Image (cartoon, rainbow, N blue to C red):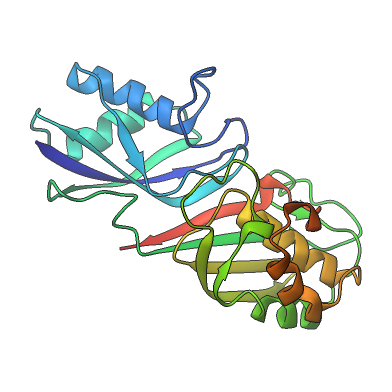
Length: 245
């Protein structure tokens, strides 16, 4: 079998997320699989590194698919980009060993969250950032962020759709930067539970507006009670930025 790795960018605004769903064709995975099936003339299933939620974007989603048909990288890239909607782009195609698996071989995932922190809205970034009109205290957010670093049971920062054998994930770093009215939160880890990144950002926002004290984060993590974290950051501000193998 020939195995091909795709590097994908997409605007997730109008989609129900990455993962193909039985009750809708409006997912990124379905759109790409449909075009690939036309290209190879048989059913194709692609595997993505990360199952982004509805409304979440990707700067560098990685996926792979296998086929017994021999194709060139240029042929695949050209066909996909000429037949996919304009809000989905294939920016690279590589032939990889047959054992390569986009999900299981991923070692690190990086998510970027964008907040527009001005009293007025940003007309051109409203679909790609969360608007917080109240001044956020960046120093407090940075203190809170450090409590998430390391390996923890992140049940508190997940939802009921997170049905995995282990709720333990390792967060390697959380960097927070303020620039020209935007706050950029970059989270790097070995993997993330469903809604985990958006719940962490929601908690950082709660700290930033003074609703929560940074020092309470360890206690909140230890409760393993999902209802302890009620603020879920908007999907529109989240970007899958990188997958490291």
